[in-house]
Image (cartoon, rainbow, N blue to C red):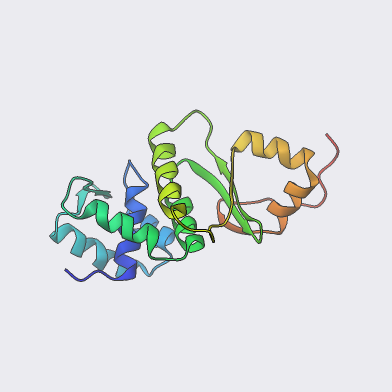
Length: 177
């Protein structure tokens, strides 16, 4: 089987999504053309790495080679690109912003344990034996919103950074709390 970078990215994205993902969601997550993502999914299904349940695709984590493809997808790209992919794919991440200081991440409250475990494992794999990994500041989304109101530096980072996932309202100065 010949794997493209896009196919590897699809496998990494599905590894972050316990509930699976539709092909259009995957195209958005991996930032690839929908038809190309569908071709990747067909190839992965032919080799039993991916299963389709209704309109959702799921990684067959027990398939031979699945873990190795995920590991390759986390280690082959630059740390920044790998982190971007993992943050876009992970269901527990509601907001991710990137700036020269690294990533600021807002995570869903209520403890989505499996998604958070997958995020932790992926970030650890990306960081292992690397010194050029951007910082990832992680907060529960409600706490991040509170901190943004109180901490001018963090508010500036989020307002000026590149939104990787989610939306940031840019409406002028925040009134004092």
